[in-house]
Image 1 (cartoon, one colour):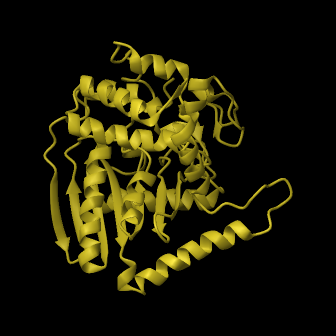
Image 2 (cartoon, rainbow, N blue to C red):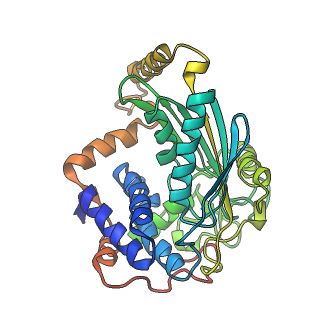
Amino acid sequence: MIIFKQQLHQLIKNKLHLAGLNQIHADTVADVLVHADAKGIHSHGAVRVEYYAERISKGGTNTTPNFVYTETGPCSAVFDGDNGAGHVAAKEAMERAIEMATQKGVAVVGVRRIGHSGALSYFVEQASQAGMIGISLCQSDPMVVPFGGSEVYYGTNPIAFSAPGVGDKHITFDMATTVQAWGKVLDARSRHAEIPDTWAVDKTGKPTTDPFAVKGLLPIAGPKGYGLMMMVDVLSGILLGLPFGKHVSSMYHDLTQGRELGQLHIVINPAYFTDATLFREHISQVMSELNDIKPAEGVEKVLYPGENSQIEERRTEQEGIEIVDEIYDYLISDSLFNHSYDNKNPFAS
């Protein structure tokens, strides 16, 4: 099914509002999900709506959160999300971080006690659109077999970065510290497609191509990804006094309870370190020089980080977004949720 951004946004907003979010919060969550689908990151788009609707309806997402922002130092703050929608809390916390970095050069804002916040690229691009460097780190529930281990401990623990070039250009990357994010497995399930055998293992610890057989994800680049996910867990969990490692709440265990997740935003104002205009010119120069590199055999063009998503976003503006028929049927239906997630194991179907 092909659908345009505005219609997809409205369908998602309607469903989330029906589940119990107010119009403003539902609008923000829809913004983040459509941002992902428009960039081709379907693992963090509309595929998540039914899960969010079930958690909201059952009380696991606080629909009337009391957000509390506390500055803890000259360039630091903590934003308590009161287990509201993670997308809303993370967006507002990034706005605060941008304000602080505008005035003081650097901002480090911990976002604590939130729900799942979606694609981190949305938040770091808030910073780059404001002329700043944005970095965001977020913990997640244990789904990853540590390097050399046979049981899960850490989550997919993503990292995102964005920096502004000239005009509205920016360079961005958003990556899980696993070979692929869990949402990629969910996307494969929704399409009834196989996954590469390098993504995950089954209950015996052996590589699997069946997305429904996944019982553990694999860290990217072995011990290097393992180290990165540890770093993310420390900075977005332990640093904020939150559950960490295998103690992070499961996405599916009990949808009546808040997730208590953590996220860390870091914003850097280039003007405090160099000439801001020159900085943006040099970022654009990097983009151009990467594009000009002679491509390897079988590759049409070298892309800078995030360019593929930007190309996809421009294409979907003209041609629409492809949504799996089952997801579209759910969005236009009267059904709110089908009890698909509550009290399931972390690798619920």
